[in-house]
Length: 420
Ligand SMILES: *[C@@H]1O[C@H](CO)[C@@H](O)[C@H](O)[C@H]1NC(C)=O
Ligand SMILES: *[C@@H]1O[C@H](CO)[C@@H](O)[C@H](O)[C@H]1NC(C)=O
Ligand SMILES: *[C@@H]1O[C@H](CO)[C@@H](O)[C@H](O)[C@H]1NC(C)=O
Ligand SMILES: *[C@@H]1O[C@H](CO)[C@@H](O)[C@H](O)[C@H]1NC(C)=O
Ligand SMILES: *[C@@H]1O[C@H](CO)[C@@H](O)[C@H](O)[C@H]1NC(C)=O
Image (cartoon, rainbow, N blue to C red):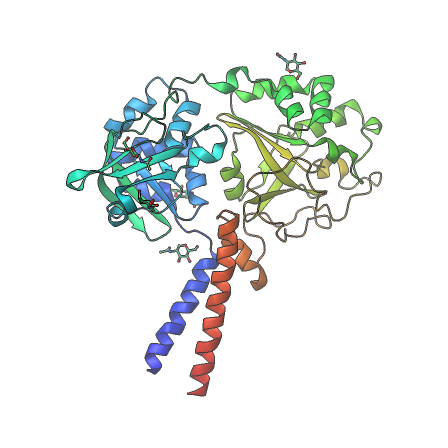
């Protein structure tokens, strides 16, 4: 009995520890053991979908072997391959058993493509149907689509976090492969204006920095556009008092010369350099994550990433709640009073997929070289939110409940051991 209790205690402790480490899976690592999926794996990394997969719990990846996958990649730009691949990432857990137990024999399941905002109607859903003779068919949920892909075998399961299943042929939503690559002729300022960033957009144009942005797109660019409200907030330095060179640096600081969709921001552990980074100044910022919310820390202030305006390889555009103030310009200078607690004014643009205002780690106002994001220095009280990192809002709540339940069980077990 005692040993039963002891092992139960051990189990509970293990659960608690693992829950604190967030989702431990690494799809790149999982697929590395299977050369037949090397192409699929390589494109998951190139499109940064691997980060997105690793940052989520309860996920199923439908992989294609190199032969079947080649039809998706040949002649298509990376942005199109990314969309196609996102349709093979199901936001639910399916293993071979569950595929054969679908109630009523057919279901529509949500994919990662649906979360991009680029999938009108049913395009972001996949139809899974238990066909006669034990065969399970997959197809786009768009009306009139055929179920011309089928389940071939299970590759790897870590219940109920990630499942990797092989299917016979790509799942293709109507129009997906023929869509023109969007970022070639995207109007950056128009998009930012429309998302509530008129001030930022006009500064980009008047300073000429927009040209630098446009040139950078080709090699990957991520823009963090402050909202109009952000420029009116207290503590924002008077731009008229800055030199032209300082304004340019400030604007360049609001973009990274890499494609960093939200999944990449969440998993980024190193400071992120910006277009302002040069020999004379680091001009970096770090990130922290709480639930689905990502916060950027410059060392002077912090800003929540409010919404995704565009996510289309190689260009990502986000709105942020605050003007990002680099330490190189505002760190030591006495002039602008650094806003102490930049938990931002609530955003006027409703931000999709944001966690309930979680305790974001204290901004690094005091220490410019604050510890870097990703793993907010964890007091035990913080672990539930760290564990919740990767779920959707509702999941975040679920994990909180789960962890406190485990704690409660632990207490009961400990006291019963002590009593016996
Ligand atoms: C799955 O993820 C949850 C939450 O992060 C964790 O508690 C659990 O141990 C993981 N399971 C495995 C087998 O890794
Ligand atoms: C996942 O695994 C790959 C290959 O083993 C490794 O290069 C990468 O750093 C890992 N990613 C994370 C987030 O640990
Ligand atoms: C199964 O089909 C029946 C009758 O068509 C329907 O009433 C029921 O809601 C379906 N169940 C599920 C889980 O879709
Ligand atoms: C899935 O597709 C099949 C074949 O087109 C169709 O009969 C079925 O109703 C679809 N399932 C759902 C849930 O829409
Ligand atoms: C982009 O949009 C802005 C206004 O939103 C407009 O003034 C500008 O001419 C557009 N640029 C191009 C190249 O179409």
